[in-house]
Image (cartoon, rainbow, N blue to C red; front, side, top):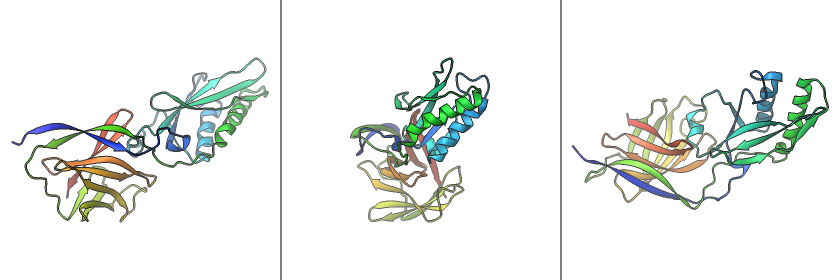
Length: 260
């Protein structure tokens, strides 16, 4: 049986060192803030979600599972923390947006209201605080990159000859995403053959694989759900299964595609 060794590849991506609000794909909103007695009390959480969605930002509740296509993006989500700063006569709120390392990326202006009714007062405060986010004119522009080495671990088969991929082969994963790989000018172009996701249409180019100095290992570009290509790595194990690695806040995640 062929030996298997663990090879650590360091891929350098050329991108900006600093992220802006436009580099974040989604925000996670709690369905209950720390000062609330119940979920969505006074409809504050629903209102917050609505305001972000109105600005074109994808929103998830903190109680729901984030889809894999967003998890695969490198630290592309923000967490919202709502802060109550009310006084005796005024409702006052502001909010922080934090990245996957709990760094504060954005703090809103303080929103306030003199409304005595709790629901009206808090809702008006949130709307007033949100004006400062609206002023940012949010538009998701995709992932930046820095001149930093990103370690990606790949288990590579220690074989004398590379796994034969062929000039045109079809691979599919457990989510019924089917890709047709075609050899073009020394690299492989992957096009969607079939998909259950509305983000990928038949015939779309979804990935590009470029040869590296290691057998069965390719520098890769993968198209995310926003149509942006992100740099990653692809490799084939001894059984010919294609692995695509992605950096995520919790570590490296892998999508596996088997030959059809």
